[in-house]
Length: 289
Ligand code: NAP
Image (tube, rainbow, N blue to C red; front, side, top):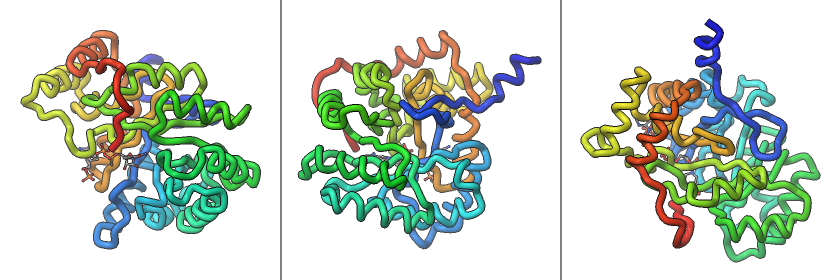
């Protein structure tokens, strides 16, 4: 009885160095926020939040912040974990502060849980990190983070930050793109940096049911009476410090994704998925979308 109850508990874990525990599956919002689909998107986000996907990922790039503001209007702020990002071209000291303040206004919130540099650009990293640290000291962000950083970038950032921790590194991570499993995840685990995998469904290119990998997902899914997408999400967050942020523009998709918040895969499942979607050799540049 106790173990049956335990299986239904939402899987949460500490987010990098933060004391707060965050559900392992959140909600991406890239390509959301256009006027035509707004009502449906707001409903999707609300359905996801109700089911425990309270980590909401956005960026000044996405144009989704005002739609998110509408979706979260009636949710206590303390129950949400909101992340946004500054574009590299805006990431001078003054530009980062301005971009963050604009995101806060659009989101209708007083603070971000984490604010990220979206990817490295022409502004010196030290300048951007200095601005993020200033925002943290002003209470406008609870923590700072980065995105699309490889191990070398993280080493440089950690050196520049001194003692200030990097809460997370948001990177491309799905079943057919497991580059980060080669070494980046281990590096992040050693330094208590959360790895937030983006595009967990391959940005709309999920393994087809008639592919070899698709058949493996279906077999694992059948054993647990769940869907292949549940299995994929559960695999992508199988161990700390991994999190994932699928994007769903419909409530039906959000509900399906949220159901994976309670799914535990066993050793046999993990071995079969690992073999069907192998980790590449750790060479070349970090893949991005
Ligand atoms: P994704 O989450 O891999 O895939 C989204 C696609 O999957 C959409 O077409 C969506 O359809 C579909 N989908 C979602 N749930 C489904 C379900 N249960 N059944 C069937 N289809 C489903 O793609 P993504 O948007 O690229 O990545 C997720 C998030 O990561 C982004 O939204 C963004 O927040 C973040 N991201 C960050 C970066 C970065 O550089 N930091 C880059 C890319 C993405 P519907 O929309 O119709 O529901």
